[in-house]
Image (cartoon, rainbow, N blue to C red; front, top):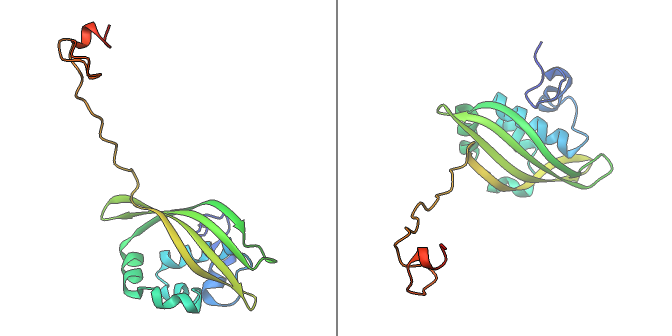
Amino acid sequence: MTSCHCGSSRQPEACCIPFIKGTTSPVSAEALMRSRYTAYVTGDIDYIMATTLPASRADSDIEAMRSWASNADWAGLEIIFTHAGQEEDKQGLVEFVAHYNLNGVAQRHHEKSLFVKEEGEWFFKDGEVVYSGPAEKPKPVVNTNRIGRNDPCSCGSSKKFKKCCGA
């Protein structure tokens, strides 16, 4: 028995699959977020589009979404933060990190997504990408040029470093 792709401990048939099949609807923004991640894992881009706010659908690149979904080896979903987005709310914010591998390289997609509720149904409105790329961020460049004892001091005194700031 495997747990749902969204990271919950529940079986997929008791978690995200009923949402994707349309037999029931998510009751919270987080539940919709989790089901949308599962839809990416299973390649169900129709569900992604159906749960995108109609006014926001024109901004969607369906072919890019299909390509991403099929080429990625999905590795897990991490919910960082949820604000509002409960059954009684009209909107909610979910910050998440989707982990995946692309061409053998570990990647992560960190996003803050805004969800809105219209006529009792939750929809994805838009998202702010915090970071998307290799899981390990490039290390900062460290300046290894050090002042030698006999070099002029960097303070501008025209003294040798060893007789000035290096003393």
